Image (spheres, rainbow, N blue to C red):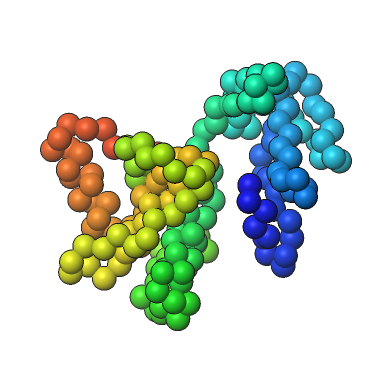
Length: 195
């Protein structure tokens, strides 16, 4: 949305969903969404109609107000958590230094991002409190005394998730325990575990 270049200076875009595409122009982002019912062409890319099978449903538009919206399944793509923890490792570099992120202390994060079978099964928790903030945002490190690994709140498309960079994730374990004691529902990603 803010025109931040991707790898090798390429312009930002949305191109991984079958019903949505985008490009970044001088005037800002241009987003194309196919509400159906058929396949359409958007700047040379086939856009399939929004459907549960491609993760985008309930598309609505209010052209006179310049608004649109849709529902989407969030977080079940097998690449989602590794991408979230890649952001976490980048946050370590931003908040401490690149050398800190390169330490062997974070080898388990690199293994998880690379989807190495020996990596720990990391999770993330959906933040339940609604905090008005930018569509995309990341907190500073959240530290607890005696624990060497930080946690971060990462907001993507207005949804805030909490990640714990420790291999055994004691911070998220504490949150699960507190939610159980308080009788509160806690949303943990991934929502489904492979058998």
